[in-house]
Image 1 (cartoon, helix red, strand yellow):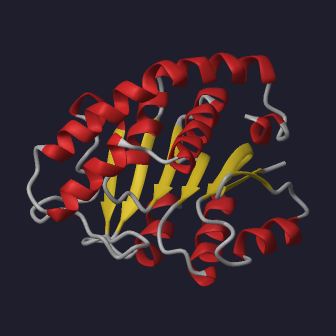
Image 2 (cartoon, one colour):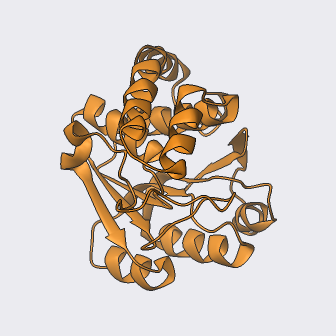
Length: 223
């Protein structure tokens, strides 16, 4: 919460949204874990185990995303690196609680996480997103370097961008630059694993904008 308060969001509102998150998060984690348990394969079992025992960093990241969406009240949220769809589910739940907004999510055809674990056979990225939340969810499949710019440029401005795809400096800087051009003033750019390489630090330093973080997720705001 301190990271978002440091970017100018109202602390009283953030505390109210944090109480909402504390009330809903256990149930949403359980729902996602139950869905994963119904699928076959080692990948599904791995996903279920992570959801049944979420790490502190997982919870911190989902909290930041939920609070950012609730505080911004966005019309368009963009995410890269959908994978199983856990972060997507929390973003979508925040949009539902706001009563507005769309999540546009990008991933490759056969995504794998940072540990080399893929999604279960027969499923696509975002397979864990609950059916009740899918009305606000659009998935774009394919190489993000080919799909991101062409999908965003004809559309409306972005309110919140979240990078969670390939964590190389080249890929991250590419996504930040594309998103920044489409991000509205006051919009938020967030990125996972910002300490893996200097991309987020370099991007924020060159633009003289704040670098805040919760755990491994960095966050900044467009003036």
